[in-house]
Length: 362
Image 1 (cartoon, rainbow, N blue to C red):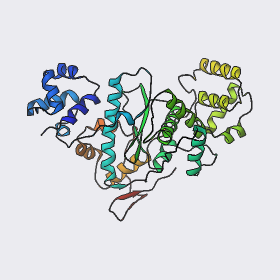
Image 2: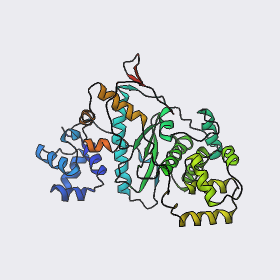
Image 3: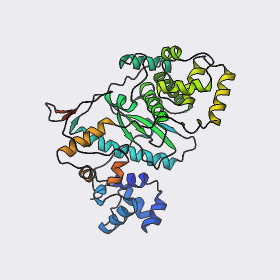
Image 4: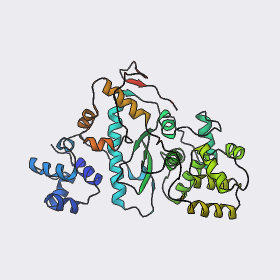
């Protein structure tokens, strides 16, 4: 029995309209519409054609209903003119990742969510409140993916075919999710993670999280979270030159442009100095890249430990993919490009509920 919502999800994941899928499969537009609405069901041979065209195993279409991520609850960090079909495709990929999360959650004890949803504090105050709650003080933030995971945020990578989408976040019930583009520089990836944390804290799960004002607030939160006021004032001079900015950015592991913005925000650069620094940094290639920047991408420790633990007990990633009804290629898009190898099971214990608990570090 084919599940209509799974046909729709698979089509959106590939960024296709009904008309385009009709052309690919030779199935009439009306028939496809009927399949997705559940008015009629496709025959076995037709399911095979859908499977081949959409790149999903036949078993995927026969699974239980899937609830897509809610559009209204997503904070998009994407280009202004990103096509709706691209956002739909990224949302569909996120929906599949939540299925992986549920599979993992049934077998492992994951950290409980510890992300405060604050009233309406300004971004600077919100960032300081979260830092205090998480015991960070004013020291530079550690690995951002590890930090989020240790406080109960489920972090997955975005498929590389969504270059226009930098990141997005949402609350799914009481569980916060963040999805990150791995095609960015390490420094910009850290900022994206902090930006999405800002959305989770200030704009969810019950508050508006879209629009220019929400994006500005999340940017300001990320800036304050990654570069605390007291830390920046203690390390950076007034009127810092570009070479000082490039040297200073390594303290907080941020982009040169992000530090320049923060210096201006803290009145350590005048308007003229800020514009001049941005112009020079741009001429040196810092507008779109981070020359001589960090090389080691921040990735998920939870996903690494989960798949290492599974393999140590004989469960291979291909088994997980098969149980989810997806291909290994699809699974890999969620895993930050991790190469999962077998380990001896260290850092893992079995809890009283039968789930395996993971030992995490930040």
